[in-house]
Length: 152
Image (cartoon, rainbow, N blue to C red; front, side, top):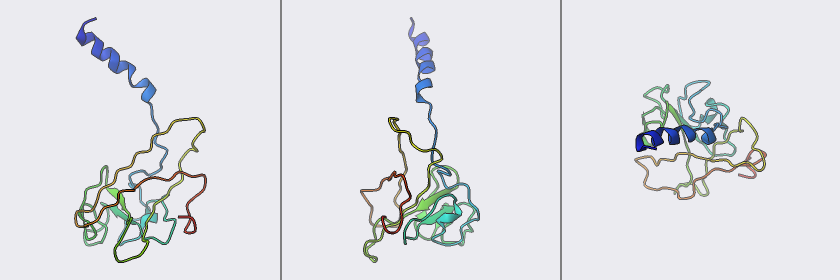
């Protein structure tokens, strides 16, 4: 078999076992019930919620340029495009002025995970360009029930 014939055959075989489905609703914070106008309005990107006393931000391209949370220019991180579309969430994982400050965003999966199945979790993290500190333990937590202020 020639090299030019082999390449299309291999490419035709690859897509079948790689079929995937995103189980996270509103994964890029695109759909909003209202445009955010200030900090701490994550719930406007339903069904995302804030499980504790933190104040996670919803940044969105529909927010007024004069607001705290517009995209790409804003007053909390300087300048940041969304990875896809027009929205993203902002979370503090550590602050020098607030002890034990942690912010979270949570959402129920659209379909329950099945025992014995393999899943891939992928998220994108970017540090604001005007913040001097970064976190090295950012991740995802999967559980049967929601995280609450008592267990977060």
